[in-house]
Length: 267
Length: 274
Image 1 (cartoon, each protein chain N blue to C red):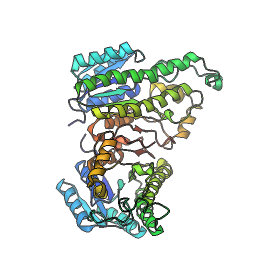
Image 2 (cartoon, chains in turn green, purple):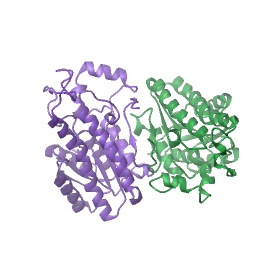
Image 3 (cartoon, rainbow over the protein chains, first blue to last red):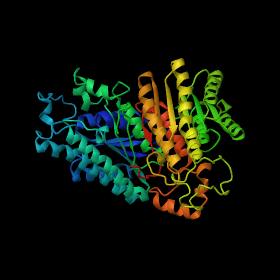
Image 4 (cartoon, each protein chain N blue to C red):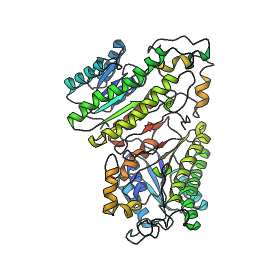
């Protein structure tokens, strides 16, 4: 018996990294899954993987930073499956120039990305996707959960960076701190509807987002030194955390953030 | 997702009732054999029977967790019975110095605010009460943790330690400072232990439950006005059940939480803890 038997889950950022791992794990536990992402080709791969596990899935191309896309995503989910029980909001960018799956150049000057030097557009882009995007997804799905009156579980992928300063990535840290506070506020607003809202603050995880760091022998020492377990996390470890928060096993938990970070100090 | 603790051996202190009992039963359902440690022999034996009903093996060890010798003897008994220890849930604890698990809560507790709103305040509290609570809740957990950890390290097997702290680790508790301080200490102990053991395959995490329906909270939950205020203020509007905490302990004890160490999980119905 799967922990999400008969449940319908929406997963944004479902084409790769943490989102893909969550989509697959949810399916392995019996859920049907709506995969939302910008990347259609890799989104289709996730759909195929879920179907390979014997569950149903659809792909909906979604730019989570736009309200219209989030509303269309929720509509598509309802049309296909009739309701939504679980939302996993994993879509995000590490920087204003990040494109999932593409390797980025390492800045020659480590201070080029400090707040005093960073173009405002980078800040705006990161907040638009990571923070406003999660808010828009949460409320599109949240509205439909409220309308259905059956409760639900929302899991937002924040980051340990919500509470740990990372010089050169202030926009990312601020956006994730925002997701964490959004989670707490939403948890309060939706508790009476039996919709639980929690966040995950992963430490450093082996995903496309950290590939540039992991491929650089010098850069990779920073994250490893910050992580008492001395390794990067793997997407299935974050997916197991998401499963716990999505399932009934966490039914007394809302407004919380869980940190699978290998012991990374988060204050 | 059944069988998450198949073949594992778990030590559970405070295993005779409340959160400890529920955790023992849940772990047994997931395939673990259990060492029940408690000071209440009859209820400890009931937990053993509950584990056996679920098809797993269990032994009971009388253990005053505030004493090093009892914790060491308990660790020895576990290894003797089952060969090794994979998991420890340190759930033994008291809410105040005169607490006796299972005792009639209607007997007036001289520390309850209904008697005198400031009688339990730090300024008035007998130092002996403070010492008793710290001895059981904080030093006791440290002694249990290390008795178990020593045996995990000796055997060289990976392990998972789950300490039952409390939301009180992070919240002020007027009239029950010693409880809040003891639980804050458990949380701090958890963090330091987690770093000491991170490179040796032993994870250490804590749980900060909210108000759970156990013998420990009965003196409050039996009070209608207390319950009305609680239900009004708890976002999810209900008491936690021992099973809620047992499920959290299961997550932390199992490989599902393999990238977690030094963390505090708070199943508390949404109470703000900072």
